[in-house]
Amino acid sequence: MLLLLSSELVLVRTGLVLPMMVCFLRYDRNNFYQDTTLTGNAPICGNRTSRPNALNPVAQQLLNDLSKATPRISGFFAATKSEESGVAVYGVAQCAETITESGCQDCLTIAYKNIEGCLPKNAEGRAVDAACFMRKFKQEESGHYWGCSWRKPKAAERGNILGGTELRGPVSYRFKDLKIATKDFNESNKLGEGGFGDVYKGILKNGNVVAVKKLAMFSSRAKADFETEVRLISNVHHRNLIRLLGCSIKGAELLLAYEYMANGSLERYLYGDKRGMLNWKQRFNIICGTARGLAYLHEQFHVCIIHRDIKSSNILLDDEFQMKIADFGLVRLLPEDQSHVSTKFAGTLGYTAPEYAIHGHLTEKVDVYSFGVVVLEIISGRRSNTMQIEPVTEYLLEQAWKLHETGMPEKLVDETLDPNGYNEQEVKKIIEIALMCTQSPANLRPSVSEVVVMLLSDRSTNTRTPSRPTIISMDKSTQWTHR
Image (cartoon, rainbow, N blue to C red; front, top):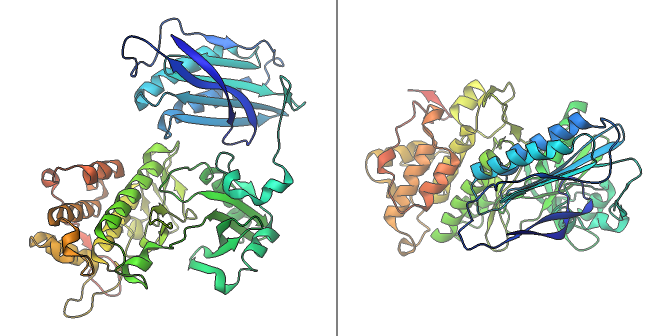
């Protein structure tokens, strides 16, 4: 038996509150957790008719996008909107989390075909199956739907961007509010700086603390890219990724407001003023969290996102030392052919994969390489792009490979770590995983999801012994030289 309960849901990309039938309740004497479809499934078309042929192609595309994207999103839930000629089409899809990604895809494929039967005559259509739900409906210019009015954010809510964007996407924030919050971008409030702009601590009128990134972009193209990127990043929700809360555009001034991380960047705790404060358990959790965050960006979000600048300064820590990946200003989307040649380098030498730094070849394996380097920094407490002090003068990655090849990888471990606080074999395994991530060519590197499995597995990595890359850091003036 299948029973649906009514609940109120906030559409992720629209900020509109609508009554949605998305709660599943079922009981049976047989185990049905892996069931995806049931015989006799059919659409439920609403009574309200739509304007003849109004937005039929748009509605079909929206439903098609939902059926493909939802199985790839963590939690198997997605909601979206398309609009044309004064008519908006809304859609929502959800799968039970007890089924697999492929099961969710199968269920929603059938739901999509069923709900097509409601087009174009009916303004609303629903499809319900054993483990999934899909709904679409159209909103005419009047702004009302079955007596439920569209609810726009109140003016007073503009300041409360912390809770306000959790389900609603980016808030358009007033420039003067962020200027006041940061005390006119005072140097005393600066949290950090980078090639794309500086970051300041801001305290809003309601007392919430945010991090405001002031982007150094001025062209009209940059502004267009900014707006597109903000819409995308606002829908990235993962416990190991910094959440974009809001934005502001005033002339050439482009601002991003992020959640604030009280303990700042990881680099402070590895080789900065807080060096030696992180124990092994905290370091291991940071490694795993970084891998999970990247796996979400690469494989679980509805499009593949390549960060391109993974480094210790872009890994931030909250007041409980839980990590989150920051700085999506360099994000680019992976095209359908899974790779492309970029004419504009974006990244940090010492962390950047050789195929990208030298040839501009960009795939998700660029992030895998950077992750491997960061793992070596976390273990050693050393910067990757500076030479070690005498008697050994070599870059971190070069030293790690030498120690691995001579069977002494444990000598890479940070001397500030308590020897009784970690297992030597576990450390060796993680160093080996990090070296796997830095192999060349790029196809030898594991995916980040494979890395997560290896990190959490009790097994060794002996079956996948890494091979030294053909390009390695060996020269003081350049980061890569051919061997």
